[in-house]
Length: 193
Image 1 (tube, one colour):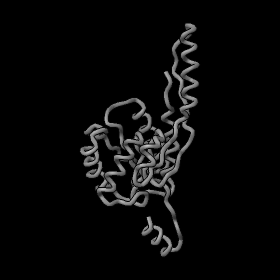
Image 2 (cartoon, rainbow, N blue to C red; image 1 turned 135 degrees about the vertical axis):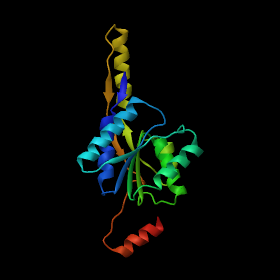
Image 3 (spheres, one colour; image 1 turned 180 degrees about the vertical axis):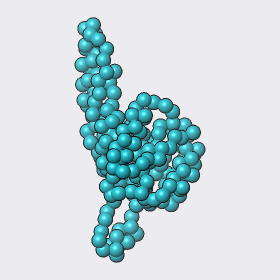
Image 4 (cartoon, rainbow, N blue to C red; image 1 turned 90 degrees about the vertical axis):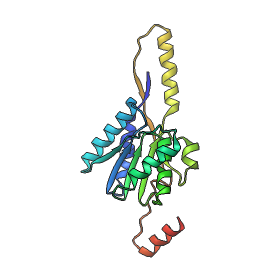
């Protein structure tokens, strides 16, 4: 079995969302129970707690591919949270649904809501408004591990679980918060954005 190291990805996401300090931290789950989703949430919860904060978790009732209903659920949830918010999403598709919900609520990303997901799916991340930051898994290493594991299994070796790490973060507009000491400059940047 070849698995993405969800805990390492959650640690990177936590570090990205902790600066600058947010009033609320949240994790948005995948639409059904999957072990990696739970690992990501658990690690994020632990690390945020170490920094003196709690997280709010959102478990969708609708399927993540049901765009209309999931966006409505997220919109109704996000509007009630204390701003600014740092949201770690289970996947990039989940991030895109969150960004859509924020747009409907007229919330500024990343001003009111910072969002980061996992998978670095460029089609999703680059075509969202604004573009979405994401943790990039090391798919090349995953391929090598899968090939090595297959070779070992074909030679009669035992099954085992192997994990591959993330490459790092691909920062896009959803987490790029610009801070200026001059209020006029800050207002101008916000107006341009």
